[in-house]
Length: 149
Image (cartoon, rainbow, N blue to C red; front, side):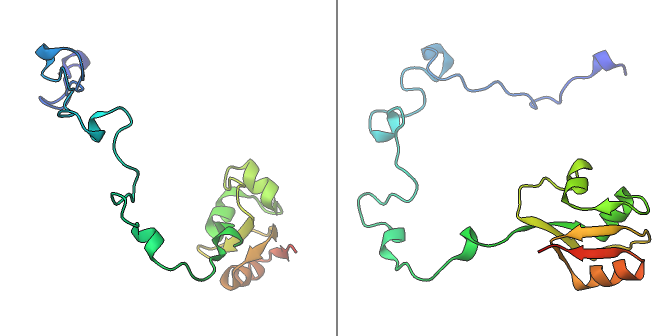
């Protein structure tokens, strides 16, 4: 068998449904939308949650309480194992260096180091938060841990 002999499995590639291309296509005239009515029109149909004019469920239920989602602080998490694999002895590990190496994207409120994996290198960690196990492992390996404001 050669590269030019390769073919997709029978039935794997289907032609797309070409609507409104004449009666010979099988989808002419009404283009598979039946006849008349709201759903036959362009942009037809109702928005999600519409109940035909009846008071919708999301408006019938009481609105109570406070949701912290808008105000919550969200951290990008980095495990010790990832740090250990990407940095050399004596390197500085902070937001800038992590972003340069493509470990974090930088679209959140800070960096939190988690304790998954082992670390053997002596690094300087400048992070916003660090878990207890990660701090313990890092200090045991001889790392300098600085938790920023």
